[in-house]
Amino acid sequence: MQTLFSTEGLPPRNGFKLWRELLGERLVPIEVERLDDDGPFQGRLDVAEIGPLHISRLTQSALRCETTPSAARRHDRSGMVVVLFKLAGLSTSLQDGREAVQRPGDMVVLDHRPSVVTAHVNSQALFLELPRERLERVLGSTRLYTGLSVGADLASTKLTTTFLHELIRVRHQLTPDAAERMAAVGVDLILASLAERLAREAPRPLHGSVVVQRAKAYVEANLQDPTLDPPQLAVATGVSLRRLQELFHERGQHISDWIWERRLAMAAKRLADPACLHLPIGTLAYGCGFTS
Image 1 (tube, rainbow, N blue to C red):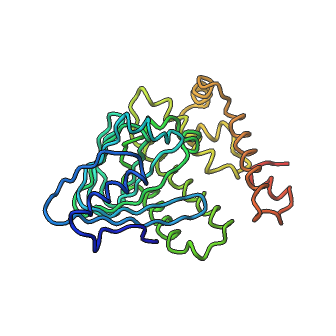
Image 2: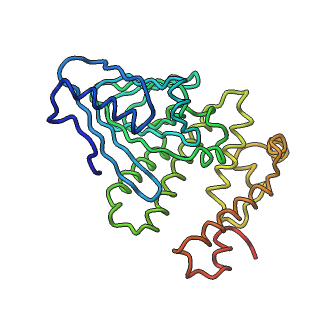
Image 3: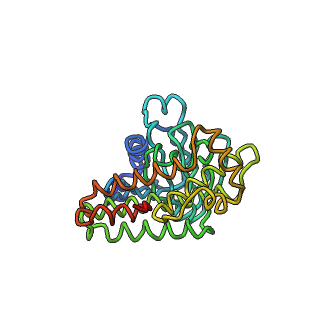
């Protein structure tokens, strides 16, 4: 990754002030408080761009960062959410009434709404922004999972973290088209990790929403399967077909229509992808799960 800023070599009295200004420019205007005044402040920002993904790696001394309601309004990023991958040290996050600890290997999603993130000594994390619509299309409202720690014990989280590290490492070897496709794979892995975490424990009032989110995540992962239909989806999500139909109907949707729409969206994306120009239309259609 490319180093964009470092406090190394700066006069000790200037390091924290410049770091605080940098965080406000790169993230949102936030209130930043040092938690350890012993010795000079240490901060370093490394960045990498891979297709549409802008990834930042923050290494810093202990800090408390708060996004206030007024700061969130002034710096309107309501169309985006932040995904944090903890690399070293410990952090705690508080948003939407959820307070969670992030240890190395854990992941958490934070919205551009009031929140508090506390990074303890020798903290390092990857940050990237994703379009809110990309997450909510599959998982529902971000309020269901912001501030929810997605643990490194999940196989999908381990796979996601490993993939992103490797993607950063080989990014210069990728063509622009390949970088965009690989970035899309990374986003899909993030969605899969969140879906697996939500499936583990859902409060009863949210159970219906989580079942639909799991069903939609399963559809996204299996669109190429021509046998994918409502009965198979019900089995995969662990509910009866009638119950799954009821849950979709409550949201103004039909299961078959949803599968059809997602296949069409995948086909449209591939038709616009230069890497698929050599594929016959029939081959492309079969790869999206169409049977004719």
